[in-house]
Image 1 (cartoon, one colour):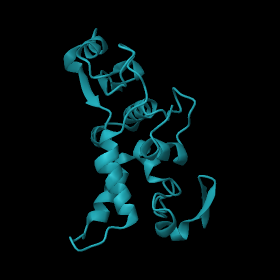
Image 2 (tube, helix red, strand yellow):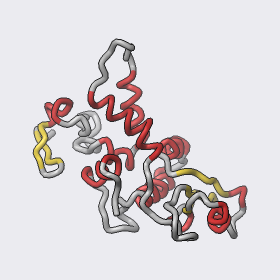
Image 3 (cartoon, rainbow, N blue to C red):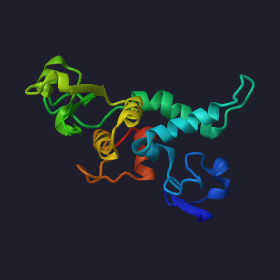
Image 4 (cartoon, rainbow, N blue to C red):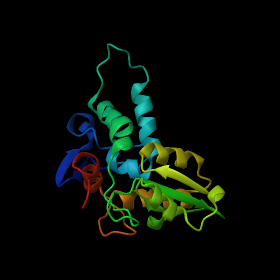
Amino acid sequence: MAATKKLFGEKVDLREKDESNPHVIDDSKDEEKEGKNLEKLMFEDPCYVKVLLDVSEDGITPQSEKSERHKILEELIKDKGEHLETVKTCRYCGEEKVKIFSIRFSDGISTTPEFTCCEKEDCIEKMLSGTKRNSVQIERFQFSVLRKLQRSATNWSDFKKVIELFRWAFGVSWRWDEVRLTNKTAFGVFFQGGRE
């Protein structure tokens, strides 16, 4: 394990991560997550971030002082992750930002930017046209939905399609956009008003 990592152009001492940067994960039990920030993990493994919050809340009493990481986790899970504005415009009206997406089921799941729209009824109807309503699930771009879908996914490749759609909607996709998902871009989505 490296003693330091570069984050946003600055070296961060991982041994003192709780004091220096509570956004950064230093979890020697899971090297894949080490050095990533919580915001990036919201786009990669939202259930892991929720578990971190649950563990932080274990044993908290009304008299306890919450750590800086605990406060960040609460803000990500309970506030920003549920009310974050997408950056992509509805393809049907061309005016509003996308708020919802549909998942189509047949031999796994299918979801792409074409299956997104704003909340206007006529846009929803256009998005759903030509589909069997009983084989479509409509969801909002909220990270609690991502966690719910992660828990119910039958395989990783199906869930990855939904993750890619979230990345696209928030402007940090590697598949449909040129902006890569990094610690810095993910932080920007949650705390600096997003991309584009």
